[in-house]
Length: 173
Image (cartoon, rainbow, N blue to C red; front, side, top):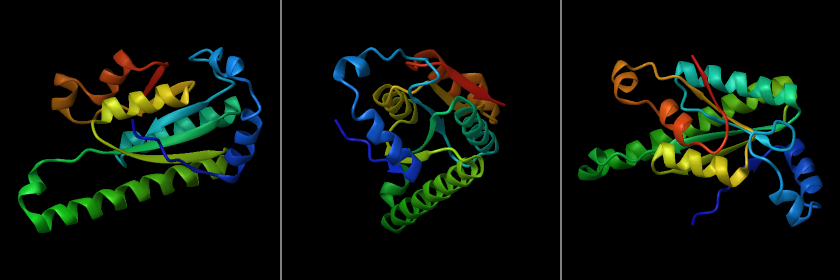
């Protein structure tokens, strides 16, 4: 299983030293969906609704006194694999998008004085976000609603996460 590497803000590093003193029993008895002890996870892909979701998650984390954790999932498409030059370009574009998404969340969280971190994962967006939510034991998962008609009709990321996530899911229009 791949470890998740998070870039922690200074406030999040200070908070992590406090939680490292907790016993295993205290950590295992933390209830999913509670607002106080954990963090809020938000999926950001730079769509209009995901940017609104990032702002909402930063505000929710600020009001609840918890950290906000952003995630961008690189979903590798098989199309660029047939063209070597296109494959390199696609990887650079994905890296740039992830960097911009992390910068946007950092700006939003810092404006509110909320501790923040950001993770970039690879693979299926639903599986990766669900796994991260479970591993971090987040209080809530915030995602933007789909704007594409086909996804609304055949199942969007938000709906699939709402059905399978280990915590409450907030879908921001």
